[in-house]
Length: 159
Image (cartoon, rainbow, N blue to C red; front, side, top):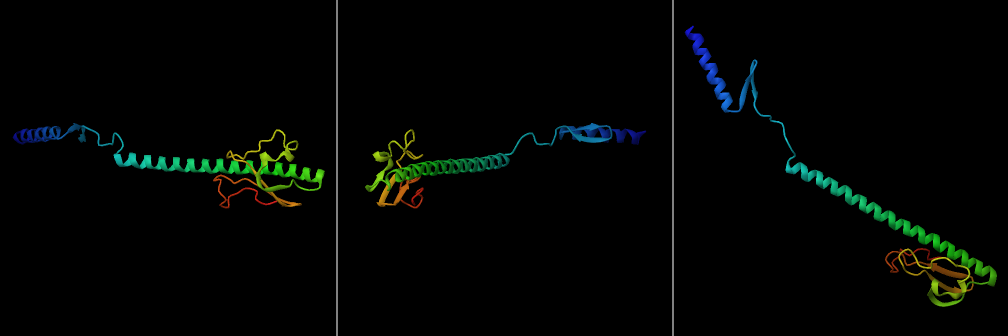
């Protein structure tokens, strides 16, 4: 009976030590009184997620800018094709292309007035299309493209 009392006191002491350290007793053993599971995200995890979202957003913006630029290029090519059709109609009527000294904006060509009615003679970047006719049966029609400089990105620079 004396050994039973000592065993009970030792068990009680062990339990009280466990309580002080954050443990509670259950049926056959000890279990933590508080959960060791994470309750939130670490700063590193948040930075990683925000970085990934930023990279994906940057890619989406780049793709949309590229798509917008390509749409403008396609529109300029289509408008140049309509202007070429008007010039061919002029050639059929008069036997030659309009004679113009040097390079001029298409919007200043009075010869095409009736042939391009209702058509906007400004490229998608807000600048004029240009026309140059150096020979009777050869002309050049183009847009300077997105950067307005003659850097090789002109649209439709050949007959």
